[in-house]
Image (cartoon, rainbow, N blue to C red; front, side, top):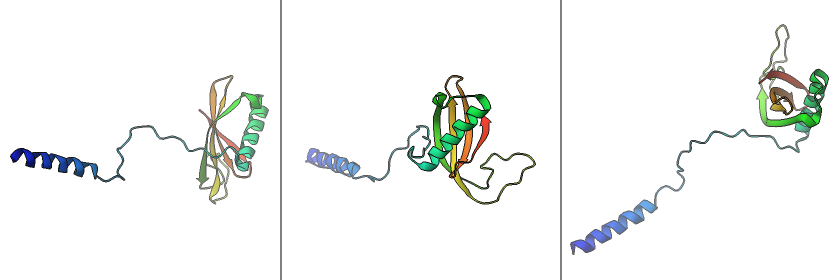
Length: 127
């Protein structure tokens, strides 16, 4: 008789443990992945063309030597797009745009660019 009760108790525990909260997922330790904008977005294409033009003019880099590593949508607090220059004033308005990391493949050098949705770009820094 005791064996029958013990068996029923074990079965009940197994059933109850399977009925846990299905919405709770275990925590992961994976690094966050950058969200990128859709490559077919016309504003992204404008930004990529402007970046290619800027790097061609300043460093004589061919567009085929560029790889766009990350393209993250951002809303900047002003028209400096997060890269203010000394002695300049900027329009204090929310500016939708992108933070773009571009790799010059032949030199293995990355640059941080910022772009608005109208194709204006600013080279923020060399990474």
